[in-house]
Length: 248
Image (cartoon, rainbow, N blue to C red):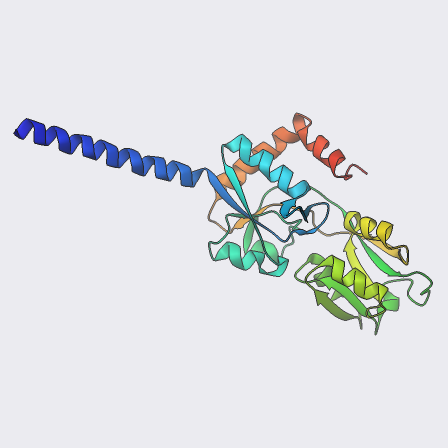
């Protein structure tokens, strides 16, 4: 009887350990990814699902590392706070790897570098340079590098909003004098809004990268960089650029 009892205990222990290991493995293979879902073509909503270049790229990286991905959509300006609160594992939202943000997060290697452009209503020739924005209302997406850049313009009245679509709508309505956006994002809005145009373009100080909580996942950041390099070498990265019209 004693031998049977010991055997049962050993069996129960093995089952218990097995379940714990399986649970940890499942947890380890899931990444909760934060994005704002209002930044086409990098991330946007389609049929109730968030899609875009960032979503496809991080999904490819995660697949190469054996992770499942769960996307959580929320306003851009709250993404870093959610990351640091442990609600997200990584941010994939067209986030520029600025020196200021590097104080709070660890970035992967940059995966896309673009320019930013300044938009106005067609015919508003009183606005033709950054200097001409003195005393003017300049709309930007809240929490973005464009908001940071707008605040450097002497005399500009910075008007932040949560979505690019809203600031474009307000520009059309004459509520703002100008808008600053990433060039590839702006080009889509210009195409669909014939009453607005680009009047100035400049390089951005930093490219886009995925963000992790600072100091928490150095090995995973390294693995992301390795996978990103592989995707560039095997042609998958270029496929995604072409798919979303980013190979310009």
